[in-house]
Image (tube, rainbow, N blue to C red; front, side, top):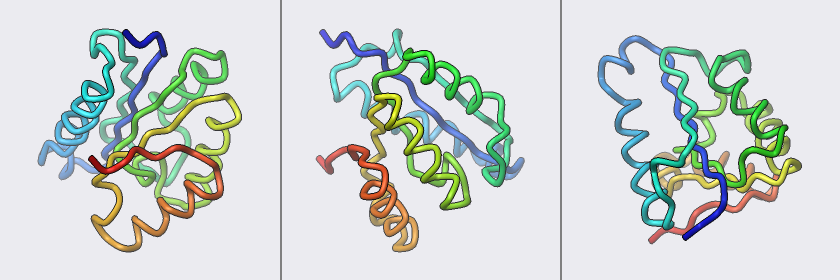
Length: 138
């Protein structure tokens, strides 16, 4: 049994995305990965910003996540892809670096790599710049 405190973060910004249930698809994919990695979903902290823009860092769930991480309450964080953190690359790097400095392993979904080349390049660069550990493609 794993003793790490695991969390997940998901975000969609528009009403159209919310209606298309893209938040549910993100959550399903992340939860599946958490389970494959051997963690009990009942103990996972969930931070979900449904209907909040990625153009700002002021979002209720993201702010709670950052507070919990700063207090040492998260060891591993699962996120679908870096643009769920923020649309702005500089914000992505800032968040990933902040979490890395707090000892949080950020795990990105394998589908974040290759979905489109721009996202894949940003994710690869963020991993290198912030020394995060991305999940391996199974």
